[in-house]
Every structure is written in structure tokens, then in C-alpha cells.
Image (cartoon, rainbow, N blue to C red):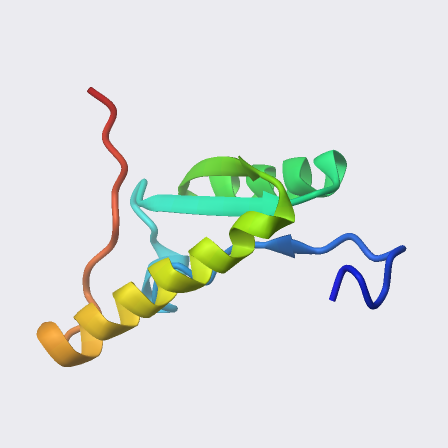
Length: 93
């Protein structure tokens, strides 16, 4: 999309969890990918205000990896747990 409309600021976020967690993320992780630093900063700020533990990624090329995380959440929710009441967290040691 970024290549098709070069003047557009594309940011990938909010797809790595279910809609249930958008209302009360409780500090769960949210990654944000994009090329435009200001656009990424604004989405990070919004994500933090909502209550996510937000981590910006360097470059829109990493949006593809976010799709994998989204599919993992969906698989775990639907096929493994059959419940959508969980989130991913990032812990640093």
C-alpha cells in the first residue's frame, strides 16, 4: 500500500490481539510498524493511552511479522483454547 500511494503514511498496529483486548489491554504487548517516525509516534502514543505496553518497530517491512503474530493469536484463541480471553505480554529479564 505504501508503494501504491507514496504520500500516505502507513502504520501497522492493533492486529496482534483480539477485539476483546482493545477495551482493556491491561498492559499486554502491542507492536507498531511504520516508516514515518511521526506517524509511528502518534500510534504509539494512542496505544499507550489505551493501556498497551507498546513497542515501535523500525520499518514497515516488519508489518509482515505482525501478521504472523496475529495468526498465532487467532489459532490459539480458536483452535487451541476456544476462548479469546488472553493476551500476549513481553517481559524483559
